[in-house]
Length: 379
Image: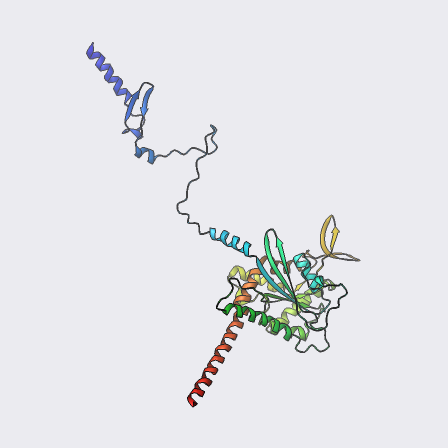
C-alpha cells in the first residue's frame, strides 16, 4: 500500500511539473493550493515583451509611445528661430518712385491694407504735393496674427514732374547711400548696438506711366543707375487704362528695353540658388513689369466685399488676376520673396557700398601715412 501511494504521489508530481510550452521548458515551476504557479526567468521576460494593444475591447490603457533613441532634436532649432523672430519683429523699407498722380500712395495702402502712405498722414487734405524732390519717410508698426513688422514707406514727391528733369535721380541716390553709410557707421563702432537699426532701402517700386508705347529716356536712365544700388521692381501704374492687348504689347516692349540697356531688375538671375528658385524666378521675370491697379475703396460685388475701382462698365477687382497683376506683386513683396529681398540688399548692394567705402578709407590712410613719413624724413 505504501508503495502504491508513493507511486501515485510520484505520478502527480511528474504531471505537476510538466512544461506548459516548449518556450519555457527550463522555467522553474512551484505548486500552490490553487494550481501550478509559474515564475518566469529574466531571460524569457526580456526576450518576449508583451505590448497591450491600443484601443482594446477590454478597455486596457494604451501603452506608452515607443521612444526613438536615434532622435537628436536638431529640428527644434526652427521653433527657436521662430520664437526669437516673433520677439524681435521684422523690418521692411520700401521706396516708391514715379510721377505725381500715378497712384503710388494708393497702391501702398492697398498692399498693406492700411493707411501707410505719406499722403494718407498729411495734416490737411488740401496740402499740395511739392514739385521738387523732397524725400519723405513714414514708419508704421503693423501686426497680423501675432507677427509684428515695422514698415517704412519712402516717398519721392516731385520726381519727373519738372520740365527739366536732368539729374533728378541724384537726391534719391544720395538718400539710399546715406542709409548705407548710417548702417556702416553703426557697424564699425567699437561699442556697437546689439541690434543695429536697419534704415536701408530694401526695395524700390518704380511706377511707369501707362503710355502703351515704350519707356521714356527718364525711366531708362533712372532704372539703369538705381539698379546698381537697390532692388528695383518696375510696375505699370493704372493699368486699367490699357486694353489687354495694349498691356501685353507694352510689357513685352519694356522687357526688351530693359535687356537692351543692361538693366537688371529684381529678381536677379545670378542669385537663383537652385533649380527650384530658378523656375519660380523665371516665371516672375516673364511677368515683369507688373500691370497693377490700386484702390483702398471697398465695394459689394455678388455678395462679396472686395477692393476695386467702380466704373460705368463694371467694377475692376484689384485682387482678381484676370483684371490686373496686383496679386502677383503683393505675393512677391510680402508672401514669397520679402526675406530674399532683404538678404540681397545686405549681401549685394550694401556689401558693394561697404567695400568701396572701406577701400577709400584705406587709400586715404596710405596717402596720409606717406605724407607723414615724407615730412618726418625732411625733418
